[in-house]
Every structure is written in C-alpha cells, then in structure tokens.
Length: 95
Image 1 (cartoon, rainbow, N blue to C red):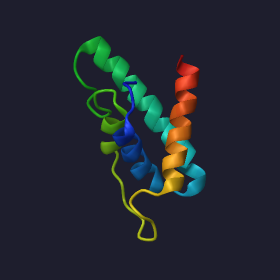
Image 2 (cartoon, rainbow, N blue to C red):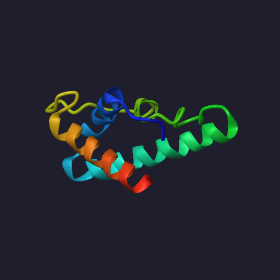
Image 3 (cartoon, rainbow, N blue to C red):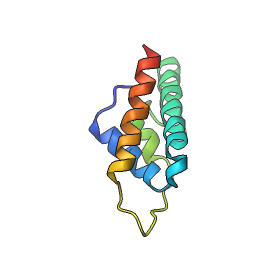
C-alpha cells in the first residue's frame, strides 16, 4: 500500500464510522488489505485497479459507498483511533 497520510486516515475513518463499533476493525482491515492489493496491481499492470483505486487508502475508502448514520458525526475520534491503530498494526506486520 502507498504511504498513508492524514487524509487517508480521515477518509477511512469516515467509512468505518458508518459501521457498528464491533465491525469497525474488520472493515478497516478489509480496506487496508484491498488498498495493498490495489497497489500491487498498479505496480504490476501500470494502471489503477478498477474498483480499489491506485493503492492509496484514500482511493480505496472513497470508492466505498457510505450511508451516514443520523446519530453519528461524519467522522468521530473512536473511528479515527481504530483506523490509526489498524494501519499501524498492518505497517508493523508488513515490514
């Protein structure tokens, strides 16, 4: 996966904040692994993956249809912390 910046984390947090709390980690892991696969696809074939984008977490998150929950903000701190923790764990395993 391409290097993640704050915009990538915010886009991913927006996606997972629409999920119930017990599913947020699972959804975040899915986004990370699909972004990683898209990056490998882009490296190999020279063009972005049709559904998952160019290998950035932001491209993958923005491709996800999101139905905002009326009782939630667009992105809350709990979702942002899950996104950051899961991304850090992925980066530790990926070294």
